[in-house]
Image (cartoon, rainbow, N blue to C red; front, side):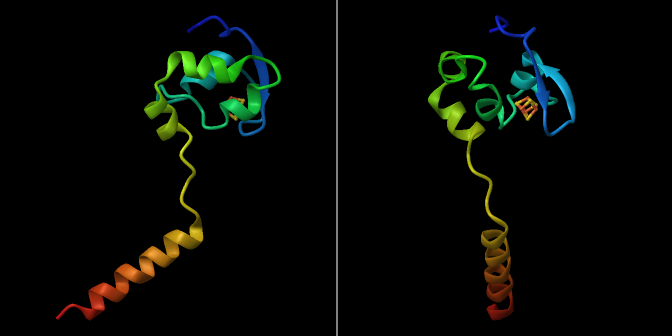
Length: 86
Ligand code: SF4
């Protein structure tokens, strides 16, 4: 798992260089959601991720965040249901 840890890359989110160890663990121990985008030209990142994470873990890691529109529509629907309740 640590084979690429010393590889460095410029992180566009943080604005400075980080190593692969940071990208695969970040602050909470899980890989950064951008790891595939950032590393695909430098490492066999897809094979690496499949080697170290189960399909279910990968699905959770790379689940698309809910759009703001969907969130707002959900909030409106919940508010409507609350006002319809007796
Ligand atoms: S994977 Fe995440 S932490 Fe690593 S360089 Fe890309 S954006 Fe930065």
